[in-house]
Image (cartoon, rainbow, N blue to C red; front, side, top):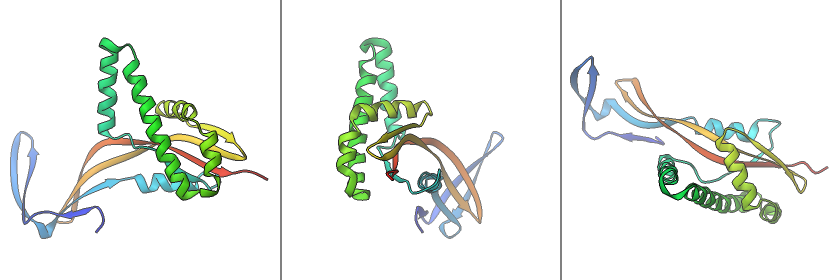
Length: 186
């Protein structure tokens, strides 16, 4: 079972009922822990929406670790560095994202990777990623292709199925900038 892990022989499961903690022993045959996400549906929608035929290339995912780095930069900027830390963070993130985009493009669309490399500059990616953090999708027409840069939001939860009943605890969303494109040449 993908993304599902058998628990060890005995798991201590604590549930708070009011202010009284209650413990129960659960045997691994009746308990299953797994991660739940809407990522496959989001990725499918990005390929198939708006007329379909989109090739979607994902950049670096903005996980909780990346959010912590960004928060530290914002705090540093507020106290001592006057914006340079946040600017450097986004410059670095855009550079890593552009590299990942070009690697994926060479696998998914090798015939047009040179046009993408030439036209999709770091400044265009940086501007589009910044706009995507504000929830905006940026559209570009370059060399007979239609590009859209946006941000996918993935909802996540850690779940435990005990005696057939699912209990999930939501975890923070993760975000992933993407570039999707299709040829519109006639």
